[in-house]
Image (cartoon, rainbow, N blue to C red; front, top):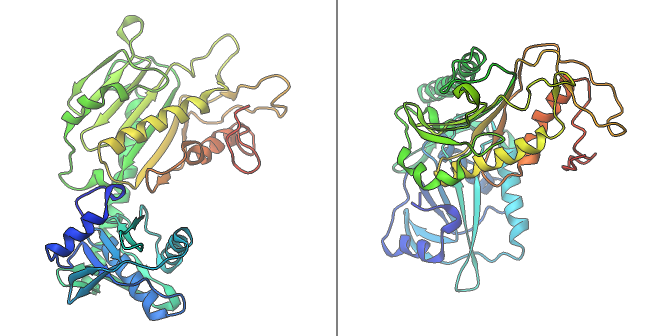
Length: 389
């Protein structure tokens, strides 16, 4: 794999591979041409290469480079009339030809000086492997070694399935453990005992044994780190990583952001669900504020070079009896009280950083409105576009 962000790869980087005779390996493979539309063998070979990267260590599949026994010999490029259509075709082949779907694949077209195009497909290591090629009933699993791809044997498949399940369990257990502690007010800073909004962003890579990012990097991002719904008055390093928080009376906090050493983000707000003279209400603006906070947190993870996929969890604590606040004449349906104290909203998977926060969060918002008796969030139009009322 090229040691560079895919968006920054240039023709010079590809020429470097050729000039230095960088061999095909566990993390890189060269192809002179794209798989043709009606050649099933070409398509299966393409899918085998993609899935083998995902099932092993991730890697770059580079189209437009001629090779001889794994050694790149020339940057010939590809004749492509419409690059967007071609990338859509390749994405569709991967999406419908491999199960389960591989998350976080990136495509990078590179215009060459000879007037042609090269394409780099970056496939991340998957934490929900093993992935199987299903195109035309093929049905095989592939991995990679020093000499390229090969079919996985029974023992390798057993190990891969066990590892995938272990990661999923760790993610669920982490969320459940943190929610239990926050609900019991066992928080990293003293906190008001109000209803709370909790966001967890959990990168799958965070559960790689021994994985830690350089916590010192947050110093350069200090201005980008803010607690939910507020900037945060105080910040410091702590045992778990780095925390920024607000402080009110009695030295208690009403909002904090905990950035863990392994890249997990935990944001908790206890101010905006505080009951007032009008009762226990979920405020009209909660979606707008969550979209803004979520967008900033994703940007922070990207700047820290933490790889997707990332699991997003939204939870509401202490909300039994709460209703959705409504503006007279806008929300005509009756809002029903929430029937439980803890809303553990199902996770959303973020495949890459090129996402629209309001689109990613819509299923979470719909779940909250469902709990209040509505079919979906009323801040989106019929096509799912954000139109805050």
